[in-house]
Length: 227
Image (cartoon, rainbow, N blue to C red; front, side):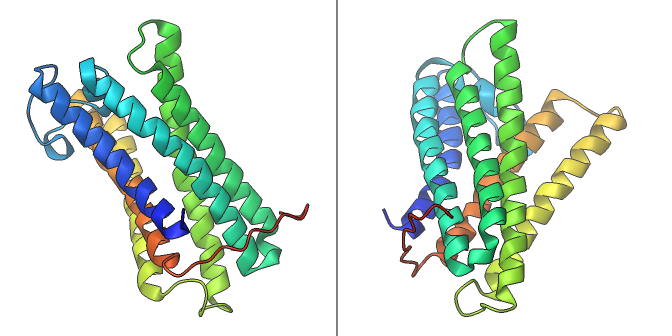
């Protein structure tokens, strides 16, 4: 699979899975009809844990998790290929992304299960995924900004960098809004759901930047012990 195809798939699969699960659940009457990104009538988890929606969501998201591991492996080797001095940063980015993907697997695996233990695993599985993935992307953006000063012809253009910075900024702002809402006593299921749907969407939109960066990439696999 070409890197650009991989980037496109990891960008598209999560919103497709979440929205398809919502449509299936709403059609079956498990959740109300609305625009969840605006109305917050249901959470992603609730929309995905009923009937056929559960199996569709699990299948697509498990496939996504596997591709996500592949994606972070590609990021690591790409950064090292650009500049071997990034090896330590590339490894850190790789492991943050991988650990986040593994926590996502835990969340997916126990979605639809009842019990306090399973609820705990789902909760912290999704929290770690939502935390570590943007952190890995932020560190990746930092490395690209540094490399662009000397390797502009092979890294990325200003438009892509601006797009990446915009997505990360929106994610941070959404997190700040979430904290403010909680401390102001304005927290509700509706506001939580709206933030969750939009936060998840913004996270996956960052992957679109990799598609444009990797449009002409032919990754040379390095198998020495330094990578």
